[in-house]
Amino acid sequence: MMSAVSVREFSYNPSAMFARVERGETIQVTRHGTVIAVLLPAAGVLDRYASLVAKGLLRLKATTTDELDSLPRYEVPPEADPLETMLASRAEDDR
Image (cartoon, rainbow, N blue to C red; front, side):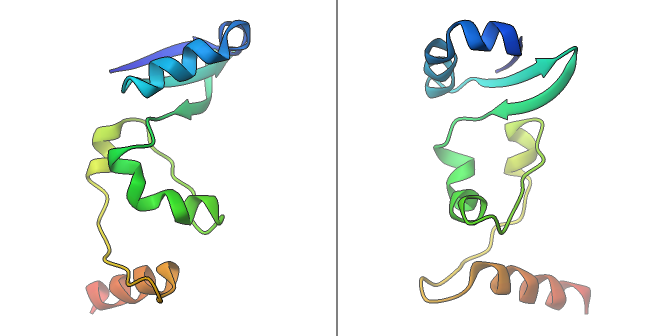
């Protein structure tokens, strides 16, 4: 489920917004009708990208969790560089 809230509404009670996200809801935060942030549940789909996003190696532009589900999956050994693994896989796909 996805819903939208204004920055003002979010600022009144951010804890309540995070509680909704913890229950699985995706929330778009808007300013003057424009989406400026998307709060997504961290479990599930995002787990596979969380470390790359945290390191600044990947930026996700997603509007729904269904779109995230359609992103390719890359198996990355613990000792490997995730970005290099992804780029190598893409290079193989282009051949």
